[in-house]
Image (tube, rainbow, N blue to C red; front, side, top):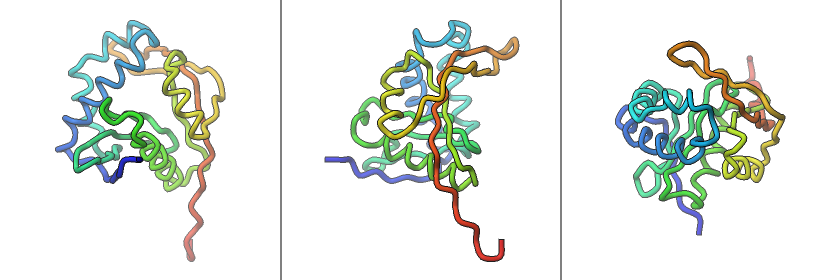
Length: 169
């Protein structure tokens, strides 16, 4: 039976839980799939710092009142989608991805996109099941302490419904 999921904007009080989910999930999907240079800067502390800084871009999924996952959306990009290991396979990820698509549309965009490490097969299968299309390889430039780090990625895209203009717009 699918889990009942509630969504809301993240608050500063959610940052610690978001960081825990992000850190564990990032390790699951990225270790062995991204350059060592990126792994070195993705310290445990870096997830806590970034989670606190990104509260305004974050939507959390709640199951029984507890944060079970989150998504970060900026403009047309779905930057992060993570679900705690306790809630994988429960429908939380699909709910979060659908919300991300809605947010991209609400941002006035016709298409959403996201980057996936080529070796992250679980994530790639999930996005494809949700109707996302692999548009091919690209180099994602991630800020690093000594300049950008080039990270090989796959670009996934999906059309999203644009909101209709309001009367008087």
